Image (cartoon, rainbow, N blue to C red; front, top):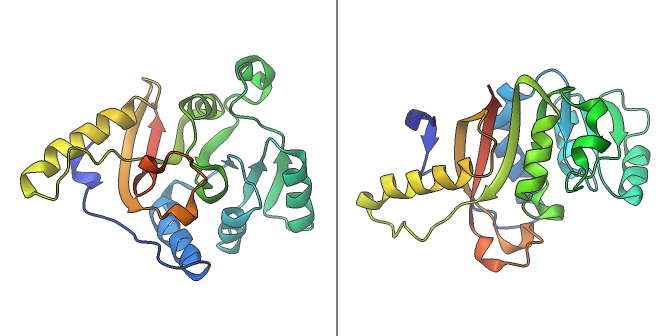
Length: 212
């Protein structure tokens, strides 16, 4: 069950310019997720390594992943010799045979995060479900998802219904053995997402969920 005391429904972050504000965006995210970055940490779809680079500059060791060979080769070249990058792995979180293909690494990670919205857009429910298999007991899944705004019209009386509606929507993205520990809302500009569905551009939710 979501602890209402940790839902920050009025917390938002507007990205106005790139690339300076992208750095500020990474810092805002880091300040929230830092307590959950422990043990073996895997990034979903690392892409060009923008978030990876920011985190290793904070001293966070990472396992990277990407489904595309070109991206993996570029990541290995970019971080060659950096001891904080443990491995760069081929992991396709959208594979339909994920449970058999990657069964050997199930339960291997303490934290799995998918925050690379600028390159990947939002992660699918299938990808998030598959990511949960890689977590060990009490591990954390961290991701950004669209927030539904249709029930919130800016009135004080709407905020509770709006929060509950978003909680239900976010719960539907997760398996029953996960609890949502923290939700923060932010504003994504169109420049920061490859989503073709423009209705998902704007208010989004940064979610931290724990395997129980």
